[in-house]
Image (cartoon, rainbow, N blue to C red):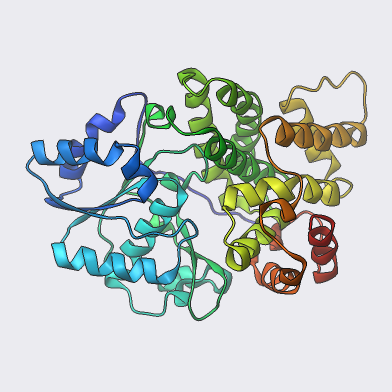
Amino acid sequence: MPTRFSFPTRVVWGAGSIGKLAEEVRLAGGLKVLVVTDRGVIDAGIIDHVRRMLEEAQLAHSVFSEIHSNPIESDVWRGVAAFRELDADVIVGIGGGAPIDTARAIRLAVHHPQPLSRYDDAADGGRFVTGELPPLIAIPTTAGTGSEISRSAVVLLDDTKRKTVLFSPRLMSTCAIVDPELTTGLPAKPTAWTGMDAFTHCLEAYVSLGDHPLADALAIEGIRLASRALPAVMKNGGDLSSRTEMMSAAMMGGIALTKGLGAAHAIAHAVGAVADVHHGLTNAVVLPAVCRFNEAQAHPRFARVAEAMGEDRKGRSDRELADRACTRIESLCREVGIPPKLSDVGVVPNMIPAIVEKAVEDASHRTNPRPFTADDCERIVRSLV
């Protein structure tokens, strides 16, 4: 079957690239900037630096930071109100996946009619993204979601009561400013959680169904980079070389996931909606169990994963290497401090039915390499609670 793909996002890359923000705002035609961020980025002092740059460039701006760690629909509409109050003409999303996804959803909602569920990727909602879109400059401060080069936003919607992917190629950022220096002060836990999110994007994209050779190439390289760089930055958060490799892996994962994801993301989206657990953390907790579930169905792919993570083939079969890939993934999670159970992050048994229901409804598992039923989901979740 023919496959269509593209990823032409403009990227300003490298240490110190945040200094190009005002220039990029002007290139986008902006004079009034809505900065979308969260409390963590403000507390880190990054927004003070951003505001100084905008003030020096005589660019009017305001800061919107009323964002949940798992964005909800009301965050988006409050952001739209802030955009209109300023009469803004450019949006700058700065932070992890939550602020950048919220910024992208605000961008969509400013000139597109309600409800947001109209634009649900699972229902081919991208065909309705046809109106005007203000420019979006995305600046990641974590190496995780790859949202800076994504064409989607994930938001918990009011009418569906589930985390929903709002998708269209038109939602790609006008520009992404990717400065690894912004991640050097990130504490250990969010470093691990967001880093494992990047790894999971690459892993699930690589083993997913579908034919996307460019995505596969990026995914396997992202796996190689993240599996060595994440343990390094956990030992030394100021290691700029490894932080840069993690930013590369995150972008690779953000592009590769356009091929598809899998059951880990379906469960993680459901857990986020039901228990409000950090998305990257949930991905990391469930990933080893999902890999064991998928291993036999996709052993040639998992064999390549093992090699990317440092295994030598040494005459071993694909099935033997696939088992080693799963073992390596389990070890990586332990090494960076990921708890082994969903019960360790606040999931309790009475949440399981709702998690299973929402996971099965989630479109992410449609490209899982092995068919994923409600019974399969319940077995995996119960084994972790």
